[in-house]
Amino acid sequence: MQPRILEVRTQILKKNDELARAMRQEFEAAGVLVLNLVSSPGTGKTSMLRETLCRLLEKGYRVAAVVGDLETDNDARRLAESGAPVRQIMTHGMCHLEADMVKKHLAEWDLNSLDFLFIENVGNLVCPTSWDLGESLRVALLSVTEGEDKPLKYPGLFNTSDVAMITKIDLADVCEFNRGKAIESIESVRPGMRIFETSVKSGLGMNEWIEFLQRARSQRLSKIELQTT
Amino acid sequence: MHELSIANTLVELVEQQLPSHSDSKVRSVRLRIGALSCVHRESLEFSFELVTEGTLLQGAYLEIESVPVTVYCPVCDAVEPLEGIQSFRCPRCQTPTADIRSGRELELHSIEVDTVPV
Image (tube, rainbow over all chains, first blue to last red; front, side):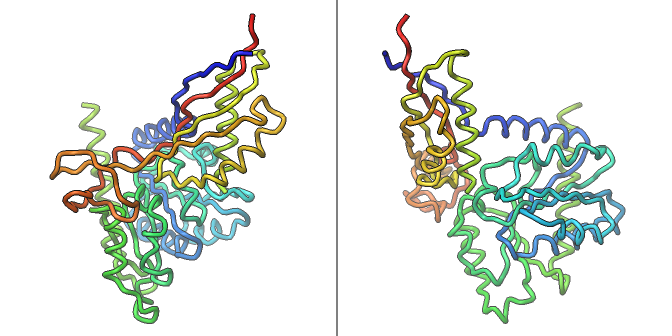
């Protein structure tokens, strides 16, 4: 038997990448800004997201969220308290979300009737890195209770994110959190990254965050309009 | 353990490359994996062995080429390899840069198959 070498040269996650690309086009055409929230478990993604949903709803935006967890729909129920439509993706052991899982859970929603869609990924700082979900922006969250050097320990995820957010900033003093060191760590793995410091409890930084979302959405929309005219 | 998902996708992808209705056995699979792809080599090897059982890939050797991270430095106007993935700075002039040119690969490069002579 003769061995033969077949050159393939293709991305292993090609199927996911292609689906994500198609979803991104669909999101953009519908005028919905999609955010993929990633962090380790316990950073406060769900609390941050619930507060964000409430504030955007108050401003008259149409918002929705899908949330990934290994088990339970507890987070979906917590998020639904905001009044926004929410769907839970139970991964049953899987450590990250993939584009087809998100797509399946969006099937019943009319994207044209949304302004913002949030995808809360499974709490994990490694596995979600390689899976594009068609998001407009990836947001990496880090809480003051976690240690300032977390971005250095998980450079892959922080590096693929567009925005970083330091949460629970109201606890910074109690945790002896070194703010400068944390920002330096983020800057080191992703120079020039936009960084927010927030507290859901005290409201600190929330206005800036919401304004950023509004701006990001209108910039995205005007970019698309420019492309189509 | 997202390496298990990657291994599953990989088997599917390799099987698609094989001529249909063939029973060509796969001898080896060559991958190119970037240092920023968050893939743990041993976990991927372990998962690969697990998911190839009973397929045409069973017993195939998994060859993994590590791709270093390189960045473009606007000051030096050159693509430079990073010394470590904790610091995205030009190794020559220390300018911070997020312009990554390689290191995110998760690529199936080639496969080696046994072909039955006609």
